[in-house]
Amino acid sequence: MLTILVINSKGGSGKTTLTTNLASYYATRKIRIAIMDYDPQGSSIHWLRVRPDELEKIHGANAAPAKGAVPLRSTHAWVPADTEVTIIDAPAGAKGLLLQDLVRKSNFIVIPVAPSPIDIHATADFIKELFLFGGARNSKAKIAVVANRVRNSSSSVYESLQRFLNSLKLPFLTSIHDSENYLYASEKGIGVFEMDKSATIAERQELMPILKWLNGQFPDKFGTRLEDDASSLNETRSFAMGTQNFTVLSATGKFKSYP
Ligand SMILES: Nc1ncnc2c1ncn2[C@@H]1O[C@H](COP(=O)(O)OP(=O)(O)OP(=O)(O)O)[C@@H](O)[C@H]1O
Ligand SMILES: [Mg+2]
Image 1 (cartoon, protein in one colour):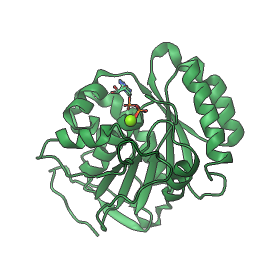
Image 2 (image 1 turned 90 degrees about the vertical axis):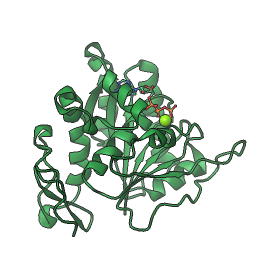
Image 3 (image 1 turned 90 degrees about the horizontal axis):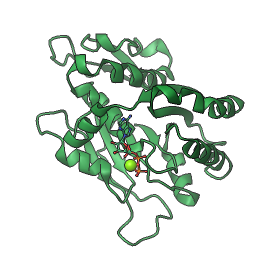
Image 4 (image 1 turned 180 degrees about the vertical axis):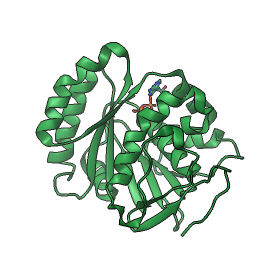
């Protein structure tokens, strides 16, 4: 099983939005997917609750500490044994032992960051914490940052963060723009990959570099890599994650094989 941690200690940066959209993408690919929601607000669990029954199932594990308890360590939430990808939706403010536990569990760490100077400053501090105290320096987890809620005017505010990331050799994968479609999807329990394609082309294209990065970490020997063209999502493809090979939906929408 591969584990993707979506985290930023800064609240409201887009952790849940990214978690739910990545999860729904993998679900459309018939990958057995689970979300572990570590946030006591339970936003991902809520999203799963309103998710339409006819869509691909996503397992939800409520990993938040009991009400009133201090979140010192990660809890042992349960996901089905045959889960292939688990996405962890981290709470705002994760630090200390909880942060170390989450990092230890993860193969990939994705950090969304909103474009305000305050968010960018807080994120730089968080990344320092991740390396100095979170165990990221000694972990095998691959780390990347994505800009979220970007408006046209906001790209220049990322320049200082970009320099900081360059100095750490961390990739800045993509800019996700501020879009009503994410709000609509979060309300309906779906992801942008499950919405009308023609209305979500920009969103799909923006998310694709994250999916490419996740899948591209593995050598091609297991099969073709995930396509980078959001408009060819209906084609049958195989791609590899870890030692697993996946075959995805054909153009007819019929699932072909699951090695
Ligand atoms: N790209 C986007 N376009 C439009 N709205 C967005 C986008 N990303 C996030 N939002 C909205 O911004 C709000 C905060 O996003 P989200 O809940 O994903 O952040 P979070 O990091 O999980 O927050 P918290 O730290 O409270 O858990 C939500 O209402 C979400 O729907
Ligand atoms: Mg959240």
